[in-house]
Image (tube, rainbow, N blue to C red; front, side, top):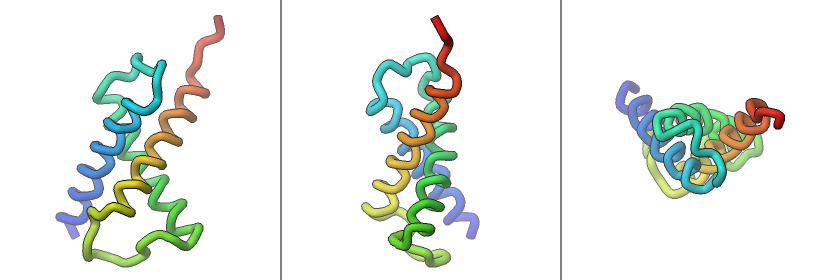
Amino acid sequence: MLVTIIAWIVLGAIAGYVAGLLVRGDERWGVVGHIVLGIVGALVGGFLANALGFGSGREGGDVVNIQSIIVAVIGAVIVVVLVNMLTRRRV
């Protein structure tokens, strides 16, 4: 169980880093901010994937596979874009 949680945190951190590379014009959060947003995004992506019926939906087992990486990156991009929209300063 603990290994699964650590694997999801690491996967979320990688997804956040990738989301930071994909979402341009968002350099103010930095690498650490994107990693934190990526961990949140991985949770959001996993929840959405399970809600839409194409998540793994199983406890334990293989956490890091291509499907979970894609879902985590998509969730991280969604969270980064939403945070950017909510925190954008008006000029």
